[in-house]
Length: 240
Image (tube, rainbow, N blue to C red; front, side, top):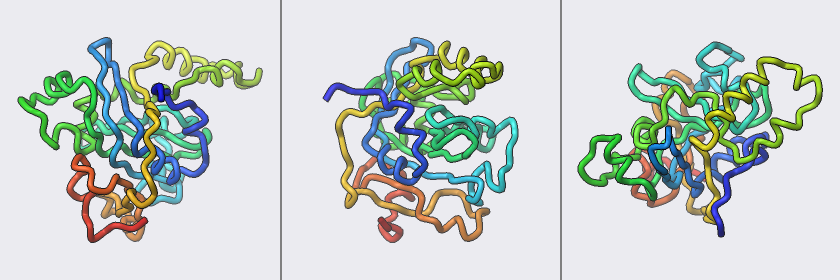
């Protein structure tokens, strides 16, 4: 099938776990500042379901300048800096005001690999090129500049809001900013479907602070895909 950019309707559904599974096999693409197309198949991701999720940046309805993008309507990017080093890319889901997000943890590179190698300063293609959330953002050219930009394929819904919403100056400014950065980051459907038996569910990475929520099986990956991070391929922790 002809590649199609995922529409806003894909991201605003209220079942973020289902969305995370459906993102496996989709293609995360970028064309940053006209430097060229880079693209990879999503093979691993994680759900963060604030405000009840102790591992979420929005746990207990925490709201700050850092996580404000999480509270916007699904279909935008939430990018934040981890350990002051790594830019991590999340897809915002659900309706506005419900801070759900999906961290993209690994992709299988398929297009623009020469550009990825240059960005990562790698001589040859190896697993660590795009395996891991910090590695893939660097390979794709994603950084904090892209926090809050629209990644969904259709802008029509932003132009057909009711009159009260159109009077909201803050939202108008957001829309203008999003249009200026249109097509820098998007997710494509290329007709590939990952079957339920080929999806592995395991606990999320690096969330020991989340107490009992650290054991929730909210990380999803494609079984036997070599680009999944080592922890994501842990066969002792698979659960559908």
